[in-house]
Length: 114
Length: 111
Image 1 (cartoon, chains in turn orange, brown):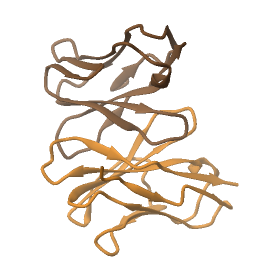
Image 2 (cartoon, one colour):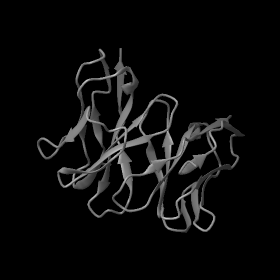
Image 3 (cartoon, chains in turn orange, cyan):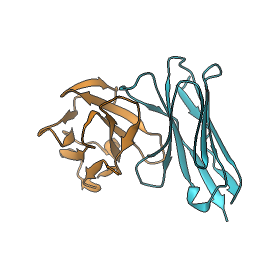
């Protein structure tokens, strides 16, 4: 069964450092998302991406965050200058070309900011 | 008012019992409804997907949507200890936009 693959599985970084989280979506999926989940809290929408541009973003997704699809396959989330409160699980998710609505998640990247 | 409300639990049931989970939502424009299972520190795993109102069954799982009441349910029959996890409901207004998640209900199935 096709999978959404995320790397790294866990990253520890110092406050103020840049972090890039990577995702390899299911092939032929066209709608891409990043969500995050702070420990013990609910899954929160960050940003959606379609046709090489952001289609929607939440208020969490401020200027410190950016997304791109640099090579047509990988989908990345960059946090420019990490803060302690950025510590969370970050999930990549995709929906298929037909837009049937099913949203498939990766296993997540755990970010710890010290 | 939160857009999606879900009782956090924990909900403890004996093995073999029926697990009943539900969510309420506030926006009548929501049309896409999903249930996910999430094990600790893992990604959400899609269990059931429903468009608009009605029931959907898949193996031991049944999802129900009542749009008039803005209420969605998930039933797990013949529950197993391996069903112990957090169950998340998620709703969306369209087939390409964001999903909004409930806080999740922790389920514990005891042998």
